[in-house]
Length: 160
Image (tube, rainbow, N blue to C red; front, side):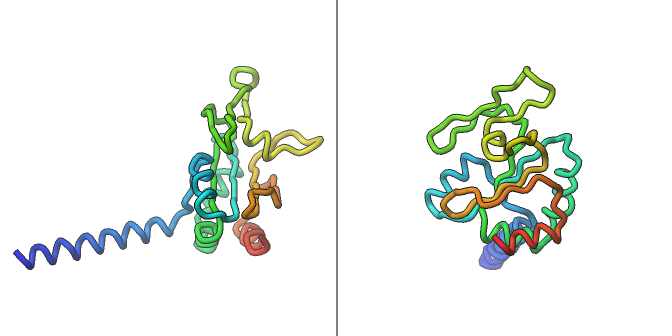
């Protein structure tokens, strides 16, 4: 009986270590709802990735840059990483305000209010991929509107 209990405890410990190891192999993406709660408890820098299913460069960053161990470690340790489909039809409450996709049905690729608010530029149409970086006070410090190779993303994460 003691041997079975001991084996069971050892198995659980090994399983929990394996699950932890798997989680460190990927970015801990969160939603804007989770971000608000997290910032209230522990302010950190924020990294936001806006994407769309049709965006080839977004998919390439998912396959290359966002699988790089150094980038994963840096984002998980120093940032809250938020990933949002720019064409989402979800209603999102953040900072006491409600945001939605008001363009559904009006155009081919409707963009949600949050990416329009955070990733729009004067005299430029909204474009993807869009990476927005915030400081610990949730103030935008940088915006990137291009494919970021692992090397360029590592550089960006080092300087912020």
